[in-house]
Length: 432
Image 1 (spheres, rainbow, N blue to C red):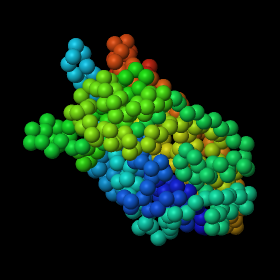
Image 2: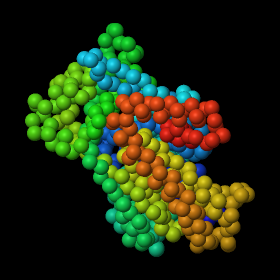
Image 3: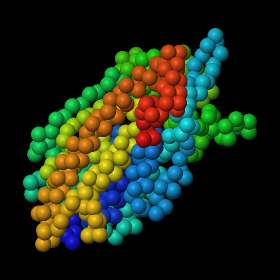
Image 4: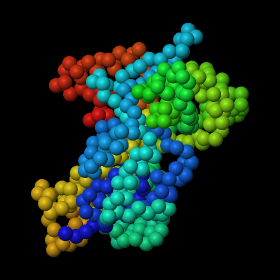
């Protein structure tokens, strides 16, 4: 059987999982990453801040399960915190309140996961495989998808997987060879990250957390919001989402405007969860970054290359499915490739037949699989992208609406009482 050389560009969770799938099928795999080793805490992220905390749902869980790496999924799940719903924070008649809203009528949860620990577990798995090479501090500066060449340093490949994020170099070069429809949209919202420290007091109500660790916490503000997601060290990664004009207004005089803004709109945050001094320091130190939504099609170039994850469909973080959709891309991609290019000669259902061990025949069959993948995956990926955009309205405003709560209750009961109707609530789709 001809050995295929697969090059993966991007060593984040999606790229690492793609490399695992390729390596499990006997490919010689090389993973190239622009940054240093992502397991090193000193490696600076591309946006110079930690990413928004990740939520892991069944899409991502099942994709890791199908990687067939013993112990991988268990070790990842052991370092997660289940979030069973949203905790809505507000103030009424001068009193602060919390209101829990379950995600799912069946009690299912999405899992808070630390990007660094997830990435480390995947990269450690790759490092233990003899047919995988991890190459950090390498930048893709050019690619020729007709002759299957790529360079900063010139390399030859059979198949390239681009998992290098929203500003993908692989996608940029792929668009030189293919007629790719491409759209991008920056929403009128920036984000800034904050950190809520653990509760070290002897009277902690939440076992060292300052607020419930089993919820996604939301302070809705109508056109903006503040959220908090739990971490294993009992802190919370928190994020302010605010229109650019709102940031500009605070930036005019943060010393006098930042704390009053938080106290007016996010009751109980300052000073209960974050001190005034910490709030000012973090606002000044952490960048205020844009949010982009990207769609493109097709995702592939012949039998040579494909883009996955944010490189194919970057989405805003409000549905918690960006990483999960990227991991699902990997599973879906190899479901299609395995129908045309088998991982081993024993795969009986494969439609691929080796012709004298020809690499050219393999490439032709791979192109068929990639074409089917692009056709099949685009509607689902674009739908999740649209759901993420719409969910911002829900999180920052609708969650306080009695009409929204009534509609959600009706949907949940119909899905339970009349399952034959096929009604699926918005959040049950996360577990599909």
